[in-house]
Image (cartoon, rainbow, N blue to C red; front, side, top):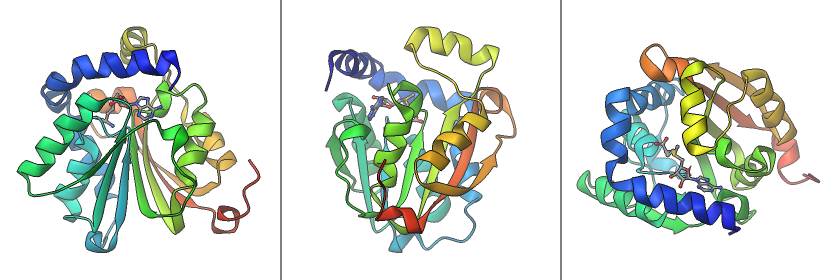
Length: 216
Ligand SMILES: C[S@@+](CC[C@H](N)C(=O)[O-])C[C@H]1O[C@@H](n2cnc3c(N)ncnc32)[C@H](O)[C@@H]1O
């Protein structure tokens, strides 16, 4: 991990204990649940799921609340303290997650997941395209990505100043996804509250023909 990522991890370590208490009243877990619902009928018990940049596992927790427990759940994050909070809160609901400390970019390129969840993470990555390609490399054929990305709005300006993160127009996110081997991208706008102003959800399918032959 480079120094900038280590510093970011330290800042998220410091924020970990209060994270759920901050994002829940703002409506983010509810927005993640609404995005999970857009997947339609899902046999969660057959899915190996990765929550990439899981934080306190609010996205995977929301997915499980909608679709039920997956076959396996892996949480990956650069912040060890976030992973500890995530593991504890999932354990309280009877879910045992496999926690891995590390950045998205160094995920092994092996198709071992059916679904990747990733909320408000690529905004932090020096190369969002490299991060998305790394996520793509973990998906089995027919795999899907549920992505949430900050969009430009005055509400995100303050967040971006505090966290030194970025925001992307949906057109840019579509271009990044296409260049990373995803297609059939569906935008899922959030209905209300801060998530409706700060963020956009996306459901993306894997370009099957590119999965094994990616030269990017
Ligand atoms: C804004 S929080 C979002 C957490 C969670 N996904 C949610 O929506 O509540 C960003 C999370 O991404 C993690 N993170 C940032 N850069 C990362 C990277 N390159 N690889 C993996 N995790 C990263 C941070 O440690 C933090 O937990």
